[in-house]
Length: 353
Image (cartoon, rainbow, N blue to C red; front, side, top):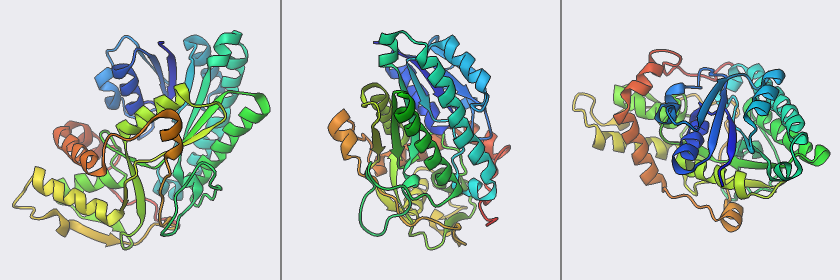
């Protein structure tokens, strides 16, 4: 059955992957609401911009009146909330924007959604879902063993993760207090096409291609569980449509790698797919830099619940996904050059602590 999705942050990295998935793999209608901050990019939506089931609205989720108008006008069956400030390093430099967007914005959207939901006919209200998309960083840092589960206590350690933890708690409170039918998901580190180049994987790819130093924080031994963004998009649709109201689902790629392993893998792929004798082996470009303040040591997701209950598993291994990612950046220089020549030139962030 065709549904109507309102996707906040739909011009961002993960949001645009969800929108492209919904418009190419389903018959759903999609309205994207995005403020188009530095990481919001309409180029991410170019592959589906001509689709007659697609609509775009430039707006701020902190605008209560605007959110009410979009909800009433579009009449969504699902609100998928991805709009967020999302880069830990930027949260260290400027936490205020993270509190405003991730906390105040989520509150504003919840209030507008609650009013909209209360006005729906009983059958439509029963089928409605508010899906809040969050991060594994709310759980804090793991030691050498163990995995994050849906019952892991929250222990956020950066301004970014604290703001996302606060938004998670708000969503759960609106479920328990007001009955709003919500589902939550917490994902591991995403990577893939259209990833804004301030993050580790795209930054390493582009610096390698340009023969620039590839920064690795500390000793490079911090570990993340990597999730290919298109696999995440499939998971988000499954959670929104078949997840149980009031439940949360952890989404991970079962692909733990240290940062140094990731960068070395990228170097090997760039050497193979884009050899350059003048540049030489890319691994020579690796440069160890002062670690991020409060850098969490390890994240790893137990995705057993979504596998058992919703039948989702990732289709990409880290090796296949990383090769696709490197190849995409090789094939799409116009996309990333517009960014590198404009809003982000590869500078170090998160050093003001």
